[in-house]
Image 1 (cartoon, each protein chain N blue to C red):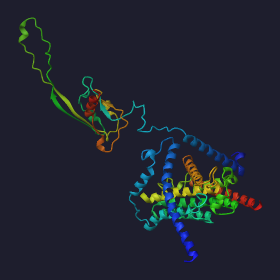
Image 2 (cartoon, each protein chain N blue to C red; image 1 turned 120 degrees about the vertical axis):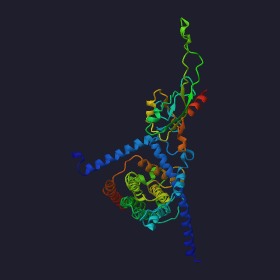
Image 3 (cartoon, rainbow over the protein chains, first blue to last red; image 1 turned 90 degrees about the vertical axis):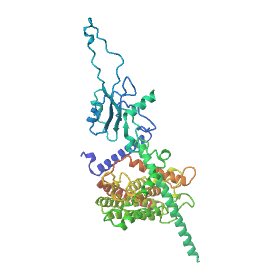
Length: 185
Length: 328
């Protein structure tokens, strides 16, 4: 301790300096009192930097048919989800026969014309019925988005998602996709 | 009926009416002050504060009061039932009486003209400490007990510089009657007692903060340290009553400060109760400003400030005032 802060006068000086610092502190807070709020007043105001926000997942519509998704129903997302919140319902259908015949085999001699083309196998394809997402279990880890082989899933930017009960957060992503396609059509 | 009996009866009725009016005044004040505290806290922290309940959040305290009333009144196992539920009442009741001698306005706006108004206020604020002690003891909870012990030590310690600062003003004016002290001050700010005795005002205000357990001296209620201090075990309206007692005590000390140092109902153009209320709310705003600026002091620092700085300074101030009054 230097001479200036020793003894009674030192104590008094330290106290006065301390008191002045308190007044400066009051000035700092007082200044803040008159400034505008820095918070965004949800929901009256919105934010504009939502590009990286992770909302619930949504299906990406396929390029050919906006009412269908790119999903090939491999089930990888449901398998990899650590919270077990994805359930996909589907059924098998026979693909409708192709209308154009295959290219005719041109033969020089008519020797092979007796060979018939093998009968076409009717392909069985899977069709999605519903994609159930229990968002109240989701941890937004992004495994489903990452593992999808056809990139059919992405995060949506719905920041104003609010509800009153657990069932408000159980989504059917296929229904949502179709509703969105119908709205924008 | 003899004349004395009639006088006594009239005075009793006047006291009862005044108590009822002050209970209503405290109720309204607490509603307004809790909201004011939250809004002011929000503004200092650059955010809106409560906004949803009522226009701009004005009904927030009412909603909180309804919520508190709807909660179950739990008595902890092993607690002394009678003392446990007597404690909030003992803490709240004396505060109402403290409003009686305070002159709100020039002529008839005093609850009860008391020649020893200052002493009455100091005495009844001491009773509030007793309630805190009971609350901590009867909760059967070690955190409450430690919180209550701290609160009692703090309140009792800070009563001394409070009393000495108030005494200095009483010496100067020559009376303990609050109406006379108000009348002795003029309308303009340079005619108020704060100009003559700024040190006494400073000591009074800091002691008032310590007395009412307001930040930075709010260790007994240190929310993050002692769970909730002496009122940990109280639920619903039990806590509500302690809360009301704290805010009512804040209003009492600000009223006394306004009367003693800031001229009471005197004001620049027209004297009246509006000036008094403006000063009280101004002092309350300063209390909130201090709360949201300074960190909490440690308990030993708290008591050191009192015994090593405030009390000697208050004694010195009193000595100087006594000498000046005697010699001049």
